[in-house]
Length: 318
Image 1 (tube, rainbow, N blue to C red):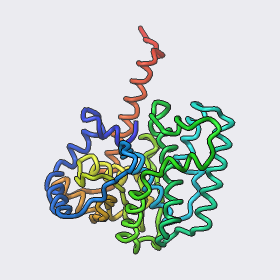
Image 2 (cartoon, rainbow, N blue to C red; image 1 turned 180 degrees about the vertical axis):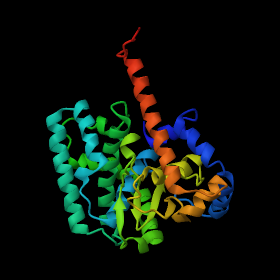
Image 3 (cartoon, helix red, strand yellow; image 1 turned 90 degrees about the horizontal axis):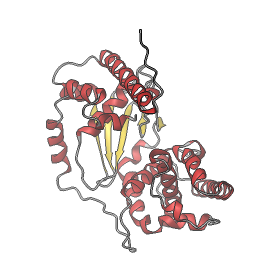
Image 4 (cartoon, one colour; image 1 turned 90 degrees about the vertical axis):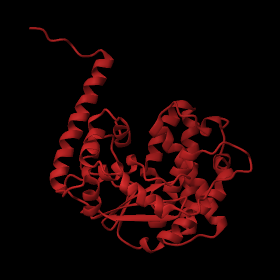
């Protein structure tokens, strides 16, 4: 059970908690619509006429944004975890060789381009985005599992890195615009203290929930959509991450949404944000404690349901 799936389950304990505690989403949504009115939207265009892989593009630009902050090691990202599923679905020796060549190629591009804190020339930008697109495809194996309809599975056995990187070819213009838009809007954040893909004390209770990044004490969630709406799911996702920080490790005092297709960062001070949604004063440590109880109960309910479904529960009579 992930945080987003728990929030999507309107009858579940987690969704009910947020609906009860923070019901006043509509006024904030109205303000957000007014802020977005008249802003231009970056729309993908592919010469191939292919269907737009919205989710892959969104994940790819997440990976690209992180390279503005740090030259992180892709071997420790969720994409690397997706290789395990790829191994199961294709010849393992070929996949291992392709993965090793791909990560070596990515390391070479990052080392040569030095992407941290600067806008790259188009040729180098496109090279890095090709690799980020592949990282996104690998992550989908982990997030969705073996049922994912991935273009990786259409690669001929024995394909090399060149064929792998060509999968991004139709979408390089879109990724470039999104990347440069982020640098233009958020460049002043890049030199600040940051944490990429933070997890929280309570993440293990709810699918290992990880956020996009934290800059100083501001939690930022990235959304890559042509429909710039502040959905209640997004609001509660932000609050979920804040409340999962049971031990207040990150000392968050601000939350933000970066709308990458509109190139705008929207920020809210945390305490007023929560109180506006609640319609009353909010004691954050107390709400965290209540949320921890709800998440533990929800995890127990899911575990019991899984046991029932598997038929492994034994009836204990008198």
